Length: 269
Image: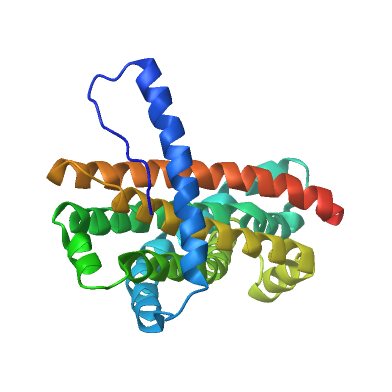
């Protein structure tokens, strides 16, 4: 697999930066094609996928739990005075639930996931690259791409939707805490209002895009790590650029998918 690599320069000109941008695009495209080719080939590294789902996903539950509670709490607190101005505080549970489910929970979970996981994947694989461990695997007749890349990308693709569902639930709990502090609303009323406001078309499109977000986190981190060079400095560079690129691609894909959802699922509009 011949993936073009970027030659890093501290004081690169605008032309060199533009050239590096197109190398990044072409390299990531080749990397994606190779991933799908390796994905459908045997053997499938099931144990490695399970291991990475635990390391990359399960161990992220603590940080997304804190983020989820704060998200729901702050959103409810900020929404209450606005709705109160129009005498519509009864719509607070529905407003918070739809905002969290449709957009905030999937996108914020993906960004935090990218910050923790994409950088970790980039650093881990790049350190193996600069210490020639990947070259040693190739000499030993082990497929490093399938072992290192495919298993991680599949793991991130599968675990992020689970994290997003968890964040939705914990965010609604945080919103209920805020509601208790601002309004005399019972849990039964809050729960019934949330359930009544959520339709099938609200939850499914939001969860579908988390599979794409998880794939982006895994493939970008792996790409940056797999193509790293420049010794220990290259490891740090691969880690930071993986986060930046993954976060940017997540936001772009989210924008595109929101528009496509409103076109092909007009009842959401």
